[in-house]
Length: 214
Ligand code: AP5
Ligand code: ZN
Picture 1 (cartoon, rainbow, N blue to C red):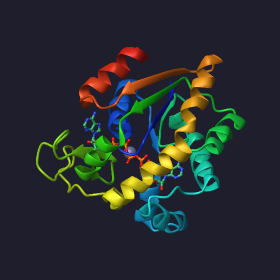
Picture 2: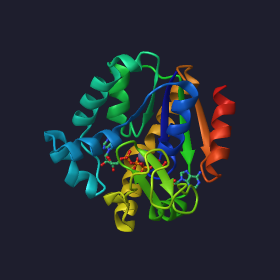
Picture 3: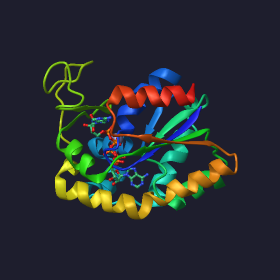
Picture 4: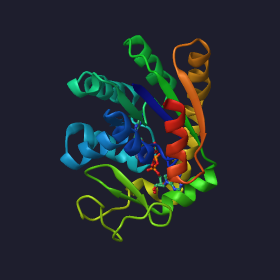
């Protein structure tokens, strides 16, 4: 099963990826998590990406396409994968096609910008695993601590309101065109396309996805 999670920053892609990984036994490929890991490790890629990410801009297509191509060729991706945060430009989607990487399902999370701004203000993350929480809507069992490891949760540097608004503007400009792109692919029979009302509670969104992909 090869799935693309499509949606604005804060729409719930990472949250539902946790659920889908467990359900289908496929790895999550989060380009955002991969870049954050590179920043933490101080690699050349991380050094290049940090300023761009902190400013809420997109990292270059060339860099991201190379990163995903390499990751998809790994053994654990043979049974399928979950793309979270990729593709997010038309050239990235075209590159997948040109490399012969087909997808089974595209799931779009529909969430209004104002809901997103509120969500980002309460987001807390466990950086090393990518697990995501919200102080009100998806709280950890112990405040400020990851459920599985008990380690501290942190705030992402790009979750400041002004940066979130910039990321949303970039989403509407550069990523939203992928909605029509993949609806076109679905009409041509290449994949299924599902739009989910992402404003519903986390468990309800999971249930809706499970129902459709069953
Ligand atoms: P990335 O890490 O991909 O960030 P993003 O796409 O902006 O998405 P987020 O991770 O912010 O949101 P999400 O949809 O995963 O929401 P979440 O589940 O966390 O990218 C970061 C940066 O890396 C980019 O800005 C760019 O610079 C670079 N980058 C990455 N990929 C790239 C690419 N392909 N090309 C170029 N550059 C790239 O949920 C958010 C909050 O809401 C959480 O607190 C959560 O608990 C809560 N929540 C989730 N669902 C619900 C719900 N149903 N109800 C209530 N609260 C909910
Ligand atoms: Zn995410």
